[in-house]
Length: 152
Image 1: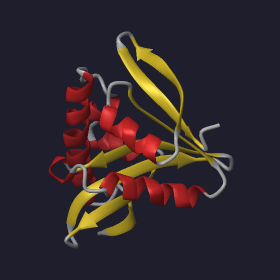
Image 2: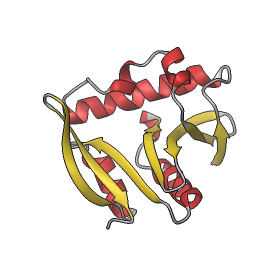
Image 3: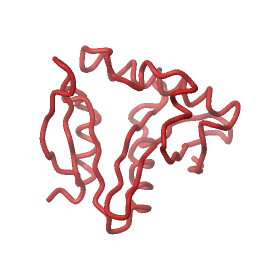
């Protein structure tokens, strides 16, 4: 698996990222029983307008297996989204991508949020040493779990 910096502004990669994002967040919507996850409904233009840095995991040379996007400041890295192809779940792709962001973060704190009822994502972050910082109802009935690394 090749990990590479990418941009949704590139064609056809932007369309591929959008399709993967929609497929990935559709699974999370099923897990949390709520489809009001903002990235699930983004257009390609909206995706491209996000001020995010991206890494992609490519399988077999040219197949987009997963991607991670984040924002960073001198003090903090905020993982904004982690997406994995539905046919490739539980194969370490998400873990590999998050670990790469962790390596790039250096000593900075890393934060991430996921659906409160997304047990697989929560387990991934906890296995990687993220600590639960709290739960937040972002819109009525839609709850997220907020994590930080280091956990303190």
